[in-house]
Length: 121
Image (cartoon, rainbow, N blue to C red; front, side, top):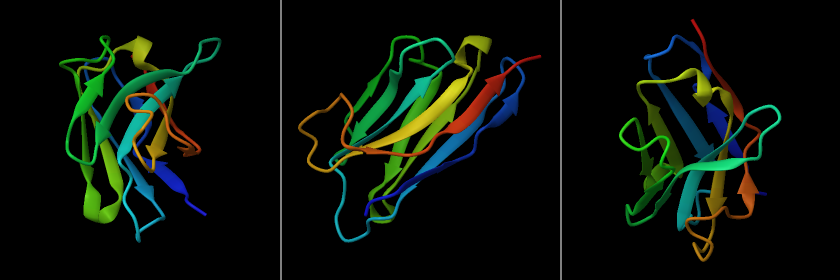
């Protein structure tokens, strides 16, 4: 069974940075698309950023210029570099993977458990 495990969340002050990582257990095949979603209390889950195995990216307007998504296809790992963090970025960040990429830039079938990001002074 495919498992996605996130890491790198934590507490950071406004304007600070965090780097999230998500490693997929599947190593015998790659994911055509991987990405990050986030969900804050009382809010709907929303797409933060997504990336294809070819490097095509998509970002939510609210994070453009601040967040950068990248991936290491050989390690089945996706990263999210988050800079200039704002309190409204506070959420549980969830890794997502799509085997075939047909849903891109929307979510695929596999989800991680999430990592908490809290931006507060």
